[in-house]
Length: 118
Image (cartoon, rainbow, N blue to C red; front, side, top):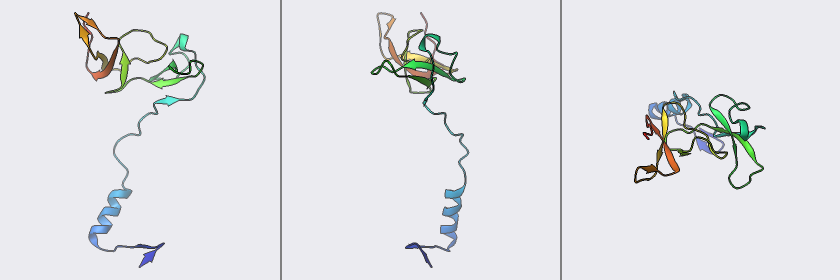
């Protein structure tokens, strides 16, 4: 039997595959990385939903938006306050890419259970 040029399979194998493809995944839908809404970078956390902060685009300074807190592997900054980045989410810390003479590099990666000692 064909439907729109595709053959319909009636064997046990094909019905099992179609059940797997139609079964919803057990994983929650991830939050979007950014939300298009007006916010004020000077007051990073006031205008955005929980888990987001207001940032200014690095290349187009007039463009501001709500950005999701950093997750595992996301780029971050070791500085407490910048207009272009959010802190890492709860349970994550910003691990600097380089530590030279005990001084952490400004840019890093959000890493699970990482605490900056200094």
